[in-house]
Image (cartoon, rainbow, N blue to C red):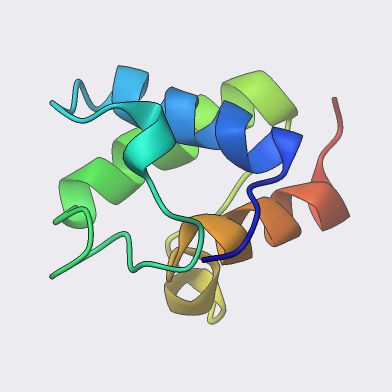
Length: 88
C-alpha cells in the first residue's frame, strides 16, 4: 500500500463528505478504483464530485473530457489531475 499524500487525504475527505459515504476517509486507498468494486461510485456521484472539485480547487472536470474515465479511476489519479490543473 502506498503512502497517502496530504492532497489525497484532503480529497478522500471531500469525497466522503460530498457523497455522504459511510466510510472513514482514511480507508479510501489511493490506488483502489473509485467506481465499481472500489468505492462503488456511479455516474451521479461523479457529477456531484466534479462540482465539489470545481468549488474547492477551481478545476472543472468536464463529462465530455476523453480523460474523465482515467481521471476518476482512483483517488491517486484524481489528485494528480487536480495538482496539474487546480486554480486554487
